[in-house]
Amino acid sequence: MYYRTLLKFVFAIALMAASSARATVQVFACEPEWAALATEDRRRQGGGHGGHQRPAGPALYPGPAQPDRRYSGSRPGDLFRRRLEAGWLPVLLGKGNNPKVQPPAGYLLASDYVNRLEIPAQLDRAQGDIHAEGNPHIQTDPRNIALVANVIAERLQQVDPGNAQNYQQGLAAFQDKWGRAIAAWERQAAPLRGKAVVPHHKSWVYLENWLGLVEVATLEPKPGVPPSAAHLQELLVQLQASPAGLIIRAPYQDPQASEWLTKQTGIPNAVLPFTVGGTPEADNLYSLFDVTLRTLLDNMVPKNAQ
Image 1 (cartoon, rainbow, N blue to C red):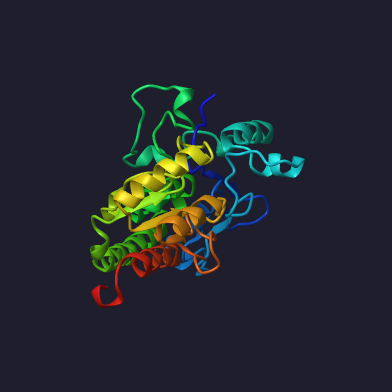
Image 2 (cartoon, helix red, strand yellow):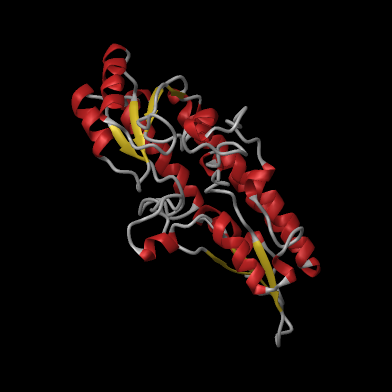
């Protein structure tokens, strides 16, 4: 079975109107970046019920940001926490027996609304951990965040039509601030264009596409296959002949391979947060990209050129 996608956003919405005259929209997000987007500055993201500027209820995220939940751990608890949402979410929705969180209105997959990269021409498990719908790590490009925000606002208006105008206004305010942030990040990142990088896993294709980084190799010989000694020796020869600017990994990935390669080649390695909460500093959507760009620039561009 091919992995559906780690970072598809499943957006389950339920109107909690039981005994309250003021309905509250509850959001369940399978990944921290989408929980952050759904609750990002709630004063702007949604309407104010009776002047209360927090119409959107909590965005629930079932697990820590750090582990890669595609892979099984050794303990039963790890198996449960890291199981794909493609496996547990349909069961959860079915057992919940709540029509409000079913397609089309109450269930949203973020990657359906962006231009997905690396869609395979054919499916073959011999190629490693490939994704039939394309590379799932869409959140590493802030332009994708903007696209998903549009869909979230539209969907909130469908399930909570009484506050449609408030959601429209909230979206406009968010998109204005987010658009200005993207423009600033792109100006800041201009020196990175054309720089060669070696990621641990193919986690960064959307970031690379956005910033013009060039992925010259990966530490994994195939997606999802741990770095082997033979593959690392091949990389060593390649990078000694044509050095890259940086070796990149996510917080949950084993540092051993990247640190070994750094020691052998002198090419620095760095951890990028990957998602909201991936590192302590990256505690919201804006700081996620602030930290990512600062890390890239500090390791690949001289201070006087930034």
